[in-house]
Image (cartoon, rainbow, N blue to C red; front, side, top):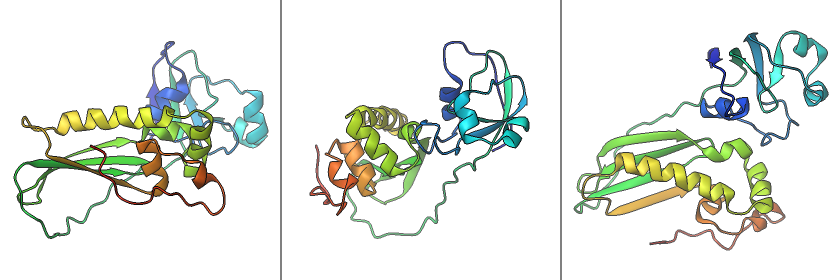
Length: 216
């Protein structure tokens, strides 16, 4: 990710603005992993005691800070030590059972959400919307999110439903969708549908809700 400049914004913490730009917080902002390191190129970001417990003195002297713990009263330019997610596709042909109307296909990725508007008669993809998964602000890895869900049930579901609704609104044809298909890994499936995630948090890491289901 290239250097980014953030203007002063007293209404929102720096962490939230970094997340909007795609910066991930692997441990959910618990300041324990150092995965959200940013380097200050211009401006001032104060060093906190928590930063000193994670970063070395050499890193701090070089301008590195923790994005989840960073605060700045003025404009700041940062270098972000993360890669930007890339969405790949191969446009491989697939057999289609032709029927009238439009459908939506949604991929619930741990990092990225992808929604497509599909012509159900031909299987052709007519439009695509992508977004950063908003759940990532509470943990980049699935176990962090499962732990968060067990502590604060329903928060992650509400976050992803809000973003998916916006994506579908932008894709929706005038006549609406005939079908909407959502797929994802087991944890993403549970966090979207509101299923109990506690079986995924302990051995044997299995759940009774592992089959496809029609929800509407």
